[in-house]
Length: 117
Image 1 (cartoon, rainbow, N blue to C red):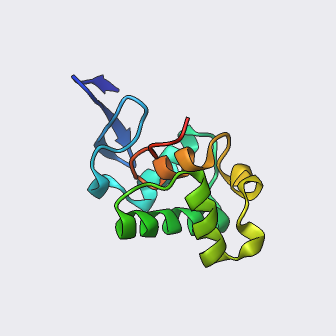
Image 2: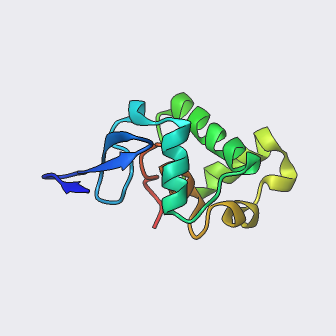
Image 3: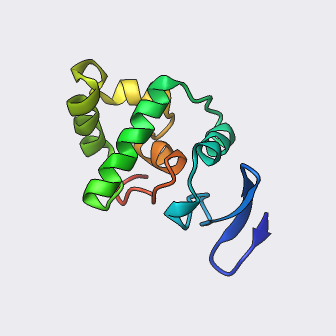
């Protein structure tokens, strides 16, 4: 990884991609499913259909509202689109530990949610 002034360059899915100091993509257009797989692997996550459903919802949320959702809005959005049984933080925590909104946004190629630790 090469250090830049305010960002790093990472090799993800065969491409050199600019990321910030926490590994979030600096350019949304750099995202692909292959990049998502690489970021997930770095986070110790193997993506399943359940992960992809949340990732795709996150990207939809971002493109609709121009912001990455914090946990509460994410849970609500998941409930609306994936069903009430999945609309809880425990479900999301099993998919994206230890911070679902933060980790899922990172894998989805989105900026870090403002209210996430």
